[in-house]
Length: 251
Length: 325
Image (cartoon, rainbow over all chains, first blue to last red; front, side, top):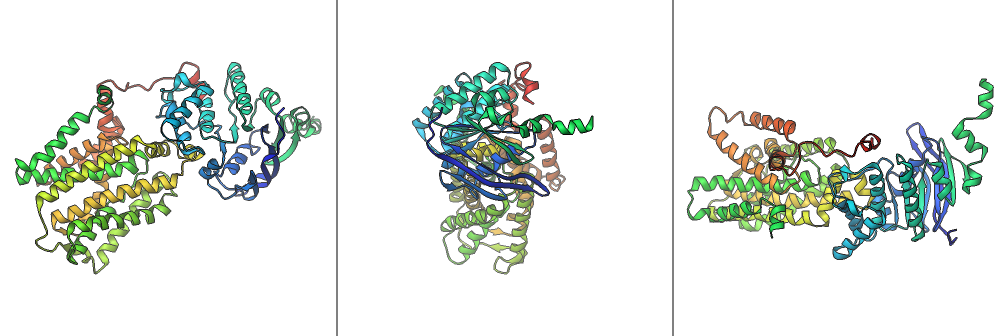
């Protein structure tokens, strides 16, 4: 169990509208320091949109995001990273023509730590070994396998020196052995003091890793709590498997 | 040392060529020196543009504006009694200010939209310079007599070319170069890792604008006469872009090779009465050939020839490729 020493991230009534589509509808939750907090929900529920609103890829239409007490709404992505909140991308975005080490170096040089010289090199090596990418350090990112690319996403985000790491489906497309490896990595990152906010589809990983979670459906929060309770919530079951009464009516 | 040479195979020929350029006034004729001057001028334009257009991937078609700002600043101040040398930093400063003023709105645009906006900016500057009285309208301006020393101007242009190359190579080796590289390859990922992309693009734009404007000032001194048609010409903007593309963008050597090729072509074509009006046609053909067969330009062709880069892209392990989609 993580030490419950206060909330680090407070999302209050965040909504995001794209024209006629309300992608996020007044979503609120709080993340405690040192926990693994999951955001789950069917495809199109608004999970990735939520991440984009947190880090400033685009601003929420309304609501507030407070990180360590400070309002993040209105800050650019790079300013949010400088405060210690960083995300990965579900559709991996490697710098394909750069080596793996240089990909990580971007985060080291420009993230929150902004290290230079020998300290930057040490940090790159440290991140390479923590994410088990050391043997690929000089390979071009464009030739990596999907499992390695997902680890590189984590590695670059980790390199920036965050307090909260937002992982967007880092287990998508991995085989069972790679999922085990990825789960081990997420746990190790939390144990090193990071707070993890993750979007995940893999139910085994969600149930096995999360301290708490929220469930989104059509942009609305439909459940929140510990994985055991929340995953059994009738509203959640209905969102994933379809509404029983609806099925009966059709029959 | 050998490792350095393996990584930069152009270093030895480059140093030899630089030495040749610096020693040329001792033995070469004026006609040859004019051609070499033009070559150095093109190296400045192509290499400076490459910082923003090549490394950061922000293709601007409005760089004649900076040539013109430098050139007009030099002529106007020289006519007000300034030494032409002292006008160069003023032109550079004005170009930096203009690059920021133009960059703030246009860098919000991405890819082709940015490029189209820069065409508009370049043309707007030409039209304004053609309409204003103090810039001499469309007939242009003359330098005051007795302000010209060709050899000094020649050394200054070669020195500026070497400075540009050294500066770009130095920036490429440092954190700033990596940020530009990241912006080119995936701007969203760069921002998500903490890169302030607007600031980086503005900085690259400003540095290259300053270098190009100094080149424009030396151009004005050398030709003694400028007009919107000579320094604000869209065809000049186009040539500035074509040189690094044909030579190899986002490399140090590429824009130099492109500059050598284009200055040679320009000299040959302009000297031929039958071809002088069709040089843009030939440039266009060259561009198509490069884009179709070797998008990495002459540098890419060379790397392929000596086997540094396989023709086929490296394949991910079987099975991984399908899942990577």
